[in-house]
Length: 266
Image: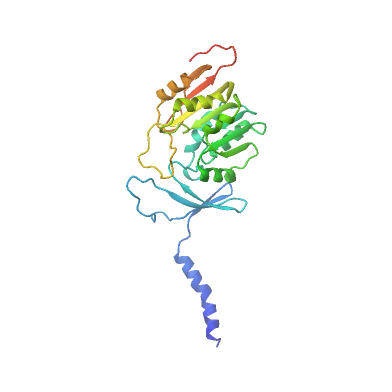
């Protein structure tokens, strides 16, 4: 008969296997080599405080083996987890982008849109993507690494050091903040656009009532007439147009900068 400690050792693997069968594995998904595992099983989240937006946390493993923990909130949305909704304005913008262009993404979020813009400009172009949220930028740099994208922890207020006419186009999704001077912000974005370039302003149409606590610079709700009125006051404007097809709950306006000596018209 084997000694008692040997019997315990022989039984341990079977016990561990039984426990593994009883404890369900956390579901995970893999997209482009990036693995996401939700930290709470469906139905196990704690009760939410009244007026508090639902937050979901995930453990992420990137293709290089590095790991991160992310929080998916109404403001911080990851295309891999929520679907194509964050990409819709960028797909609309990409129809007007030519290879080799230099594009500014004025509030890039978690970076999926900047990655799409980088595909549109090709290897001879460049995308500068700004975001004020540190977690979003850290994730974007690891999820969408590309030599043509520069993800910067900053916002368009930092453009004061940027040269006039530095970009061929600017896309600004939710870059107009609640309580900010929208005319001044739009003028600063317009200043860095080269003649013949364009600006696409996109804003939510309704302010959320349940907001994440870490969203001090939340986007301002603006409708299409308000956005068009904003861009029609810009100097050297060739024309301003509504921007349809941006997805439910969004409004947008195009502004096209006139070339030198070209007539301006709405």
